[in-house]
Image 1 (tube, rainbow, N blue to C red):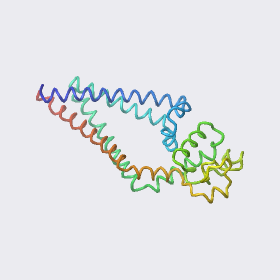
Image 2: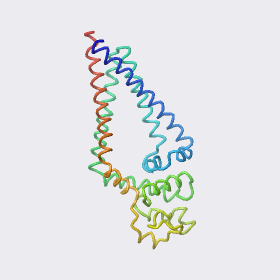
Image 3: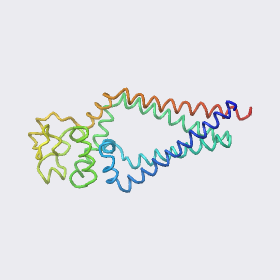
Image 4: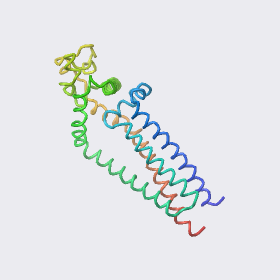
Length: 238
């Protein structure tokens, strides 16, 4: 088997797996968007932490669509030896790779700006829906329980929320001893951190794992781009 044939077969198999993974993500994304409550019951805090900062359903649908398109282009382009499709595959992957690097740089350099923007969005949701919308309440309870945190910034995020207006107290997670009734005085004296800061702490604590996963994805993307460009350049020589 020649090098060209080997890489072609590898490209087809690899992108077929990408296509299948994309289809699974797409299906899960639709499921989450339609019935998020059952998704939370199954995955608990694993999904709840992320759902505070992005709409997981739409995120999974978008990611699934991208992977399905990439998988199809890579698989079909390699199988049919189409230079046009291979070049399209390479271009899309390159754009995604550059966007990931840009996002990482922005996240590292402008963390405080990201916190401010997220805070304005998330806190408003808490004050409008926590204690009224069961899904939002369940998501926040799972997050605060899993990360041992309170609100996005701190306990003050819940002031004026339907929960506070009903019980005249804060969620039990905002007090260090997690009492059933958490008064403003008890919450202010506790040292429970906001969930955004706690999430950043968890990421920094597991920086090696996060960095390893990111490096692995980057390596796969670079390898896929290299193989697709090799097959593209070899078309006229085969």
